Length: 291
Ligand SMILES: O=C(O)CCC(=O)C(=O)O
Ligand SMILES: [Fe+2]
Image (cartoon, protein in one colour):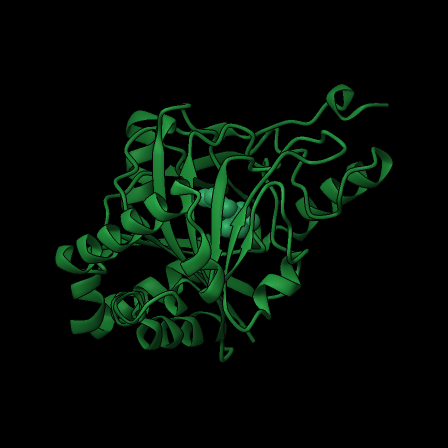
């Protein structure tokens, strides 16, 4: 059987008032979070229950603008084809020239990795083809290093995760996702079954489905039976164990947010990046936390 013949089922994406109410109930102003103990506690509890929260205005506009101008110059350099400088400071994993292979090699690399996602050789969907995924972007320059450190708010997020999960979570990997008209995104999945969180700091406004928002099924990180049901279906149909292929009765939210807002989610929960319009652009700074 080919993958196209498998009856996978996506959740219903909430819209309009239902969506804004659900998102409002998981949103907190970052300033309130750090100045008010109760807000901090409520945010931690909400993350525990819902698996996701949105922290508004987590990074100031000047920092975001500065990162975006560095990223703009970087993209120009990547696209110019003049790669001598970049190749001396990062691993360039280009479509026709792969120097590293697989997530673990990228994560453990001693320099930044500029990884162009390409179509899968076997033609399976979910390749994220067209996405530039930069591992350890903070190692690309001194100004990226200081600006990225300044806006990720790692110690606040670690305290929040400790209160929310009763575990000391460490930063394991920072990434910069540059999505430019990515249509073949991976469908709903979890990033494994172990305790893992990611913070997504939006560098660009994501205001419609065409922009390719991060999507999440609230509370799915706690629904063990839902995961087992999916895992059983996946096994019978030759899909990977971490795909959420059977979400027909679930509801998902799209996380629309402005540049400077941060989404924090449990990666055990069902999530995906929504396919983009071919002309759409999205930039997100991602931080991965594990024990
Ligand atoms: O592109 C996205 O918004 C989500 C990507 C994803 O699945 C992840 O970072 O774990
Ligand atoms: Fe994921």
